[in-house]
Amino acid sequence: MSDSLANRNGGPAVSLGSATPWTPIKNFLGFDPFQSLRAQYGFEYDVTRTDHGYEMEIPVPGYTSENIDVSVQDDVLTVSGKSDRRSFTRTMVIPDDVDSNAIAASVKNGMLYLDLQRRPEAQPKKITVK
Image (tube, rainbow, N blue to C red; front, side, top):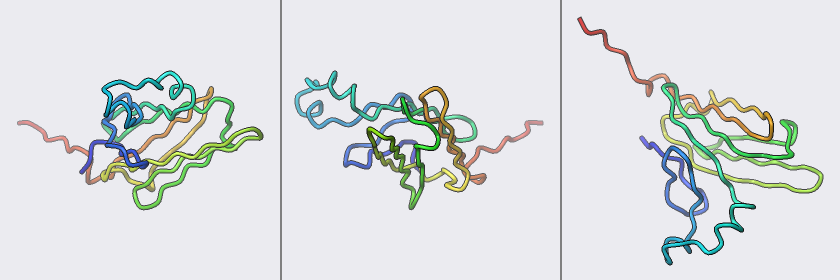
């Protein structure tokens, strides 16, 4: 079982929490001189682990729910958006314990909210103490 979302573009897995994109320059030099430029165009997102699974928040300013497509195939989550002026596509590997049939998505105030439910067998079981 994995507790991370892997960067599909060849980078290391992203730990659950506030995710930062993988940058080979930062790994090599110890800092990223292009960080401010990347922050304007990068794929930033937040992941929070909950009792029932994971919640993701992805900024999608200027996009509506009609412009966004979210799909899952073979544990790979793909988020893409297309408007009159621009488009994007991002992919990431989801943890093994996520039920791909129970993923919910919504867009509100420029944010895409994804609710990735864990499979029932992967959910913690409460044990009554007598």
